[in-house]
Length: 132
Length: 141
Image 1: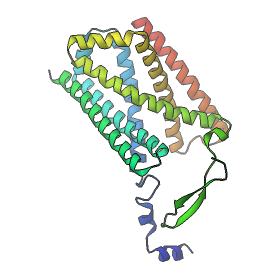
Image 2: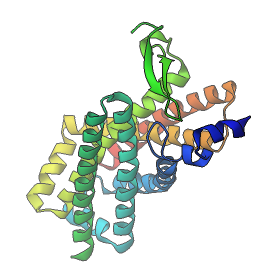
Image 3: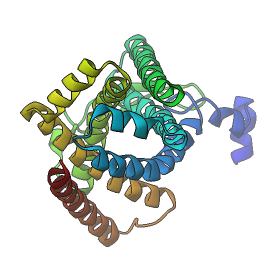
Image 4: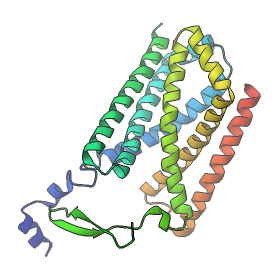
């Protein structure tokens, strides 16, 4: 019986699944959200623990801490995972509450732009600390 | 909207179909499952705003001294401390409930007794860690 349906729409089940969910895409976003969530577990613990040690610190101490090679690498990884995770999460909120497709697309573009600029600004600061 | 409202939709093979519209959120009695789910989204959005603060802090650390002093002054002000406290609480909740979500992704904890228990554990852990971090933080500050 299932085969009869497939034949009548002239489309394979895989073809139907691909690109036709509510978000008009497959499972890539789902995976990306989970992968970054897993990465953010140790990164967030490390960052919060480190910041506790920097409370009230003078600028030189904070700058030296962030500029150490592995600290800079972990900070860049934290920003990358955080902003990727953040964009997927906020995009889901936009998709849920903005019914007009044009507004939705505009909202996602603005989100992408803001995320890109903030990530680059943070990355520039980290690289400055690591390379000077 | 009334519970009986319908809206047009498309089936996966492109036919137009009328689907019933589910009742809106206010219709339902709050339950631990729905309230914690809403809180997960809400704390996620709060943390997204907090990410701007994180970038601003990194920029201040790498910036000129007066920039860093202004940032330190802002974070130490009552509004700054309140923002940081909210951010800590949101992060702690989103962190623990996120781990609960990852458990569900692995197929764990779907029984009613389990998700009630893990839900309460998440709230307790988030509250405990938030208070602990602030006690340690205020001692070190």
